[in-house]
Image 1 (cartoon, helix red, strand yellow):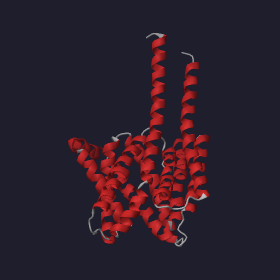
Image 2 (spheres, one colour):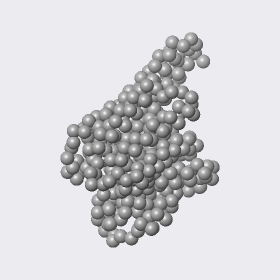
Image 3 (cartoon, rainbow, N blue to C red):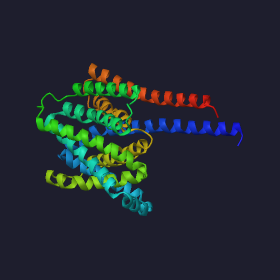
Image 4 (cartoon, one colour):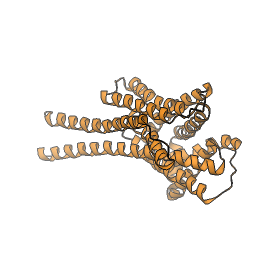
Length: 324
């Protein structure tokens, strides 16, 4: 093989890795934004049907599983084979998906939006960074650490601006929020490992189905009956098909080429999206702290994109200077 041919192949390989890394960040960002639209949907459905938060979460996962199973009907044998290849990991991923959502809803009801948001979403990148440091015995890069700190600070500002001052910060709510953050971090770490051997769409299908089954007993006790009408049914379909099925397919796809700690920082676009939609659709006031928090969150995500690009460029430069 000629020198020019080897150099061309090397450049093509580096370009593909760089493109894949940036595409993964875009997929994770899209997932976070889609998750952020679910808050308004859940609020409207709850007001129009009287359903509780866990029951809405069950319907959300149920509709998502139905959509994914319908689309995946031609690949049903592959879905069954994928589950048989890693039954424990996939079951835990689905149960984790249901559990951290249910714990978050409980935290909101008992402790208020502020504590639930800051603790459950803010603790995840810290836990994942610590886990990855222990597992790989390598300190996270300065860029990732800085982005994590900025994102958590922005999250605190947004949550403080949208806090429900009429809700007491109960101890059980705080424990539920901590539990939600721990399960979210563990589920993300497990899902990242599982995505290396299971196709993202298949993992999404199985996770949503298992998650719905996990929530069913709790949702049944809370109450699943409601008077059907076009608006809540359409919103539940949107919550299932778009904010769950599509969003988690993007999330699991992006996880394949991104560390868990970076993934949860990028998906913190969820509370930012929810805050902006509350301003646009529910006419909530836009506080200065919300603007500042949003700027910090966006800055954290942009810095991760820049870090990815800079890392790729550095690797390319080192590769071109390496003796052949």
